[in-house]
Length: 208
Length: 324
Image (cartoon, each protein chain N blue to C red):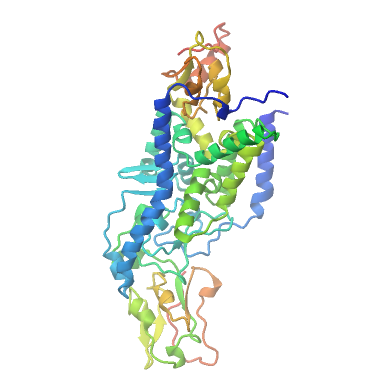
């Protein structure tokens, strides 16, 4: 057999044997703002880390374990949140992050990084443990994405107006850690009611 | 005691020293950018970040940041230099497979492709941040051989790199992911340096580069660059259009084989047997004891391939003759 053919055959066999068993690129990740849809993003990102390089809060990370999406960026909102400066979108060479202007109206329209999920059993005001309002204070879209309800000024999130920057998650006190930004489509993104408190008004459900 | 085989480090570079120094300076600049850019940007972010942290409404402050991007940023495979966008042709091709063509794509891929089409596979010999690691592997080979350790030098066919290249594109298309950045040393090195500087840790990519180093040291000299690197394969394909060529003036040549030995990429300048795999490092020219080798302009390898084919078909006696 021709050596060239042999090597090609070995490479193809290895590829067939190894690759399909590997986990596909994980679509359940919070991507930087302006990212294409899950799936399309992994196809367009070449892992050049320009986005992370220009990120002023250093919130864009890369996975360190070997996986198919090892070279693609994600945001760990619990650690560092996005401040919506949109610089990452402007430096992306392949438009995996679609360029956006750092204009609050444009961002409110175009950016959906994830949905906020509030666990009311952990939230201080919802449990009558005092006035907190930290999430409301840091939110770039107060009133629209989060409003304060009731005498305790408890936060009520509206996922349809939320861009998913995660500033609220980052600001939520260590004691509580009631807010998480969940990627679209994950099961955890369903709001969890508190058992035994059926009467509370729910915020807008997670968008698509 | 048998005479050991001639190795690159045994060979003195005699001629073309200026060319070598220019190449080394360029390589040093490229490697320095790989290491300095993350440090520089980390510093810049510290300065900007201080302003952001002072205000609770971070988002508002971030939008007040200057809009101009820094003059240099990016990885070795995708670098922005002032006004010039240089994106690796193979990674661009992999993106185009999914996204189709767009003007943005054309503008990002064009400068790199034009450079390679004109100058040949020079990124490999002039800019690749893996080159210092390859030099370390060659030095390790030289040292181990001196100490009497037998080392394999497997001649993996160079076409294997094209198999790797096509394989990554095809498998990537099936899995819906960009696979080239996972196995392409300049992309990995840039990312790992960035990770080390920004987060103080290394990822799995470091293992791939270590594997390439061990392969080059113990299995095959410069075997990764020559026979496995997918990006090098892409450059080789494009370099078929490059008109630059190392020419051997046969009347001066003493058939000493030094140039063939010094070449990392398995080219054979002694017999004028160069193809698009030449990385323009100029070491063969520098090592020639009689100065028989020089860069010349010639018909690109593609033209020569076609010419040989045509002449073979026409049964001409001069088929395959070199014209320079």
